[in-house]
Image 1: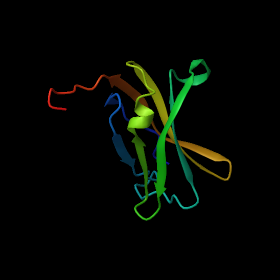
Image 2: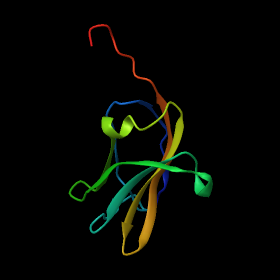
Image 3: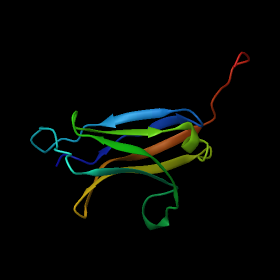
Image 4: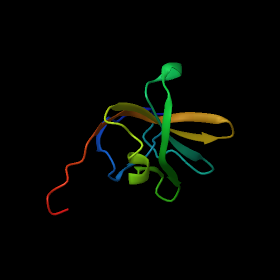
Length: 115
């Protein structure tokens, strides 16, 4: 398999943020996601020293061969103004594959006078 990939992003606390992952095999063909489930885990650090904070949303779209991920405002308000680490994993028959890993840099949203 041709993953995991790395994707670091900035997130405005309390906003919606979404991205999609299209896993590929080593030969470049789309990875068959049939029968897989997905998870989007957010923590304070990598490995055993990290503390799990919350789950983002991760769903499998088998028709388009992708994993759709999101941080909703409800989840986002649980995040402090710091940097977090995340993994998006797919699971089937007790096999777990990390497809994307990275950091989330959380900053405060800017609200205008007319909002």
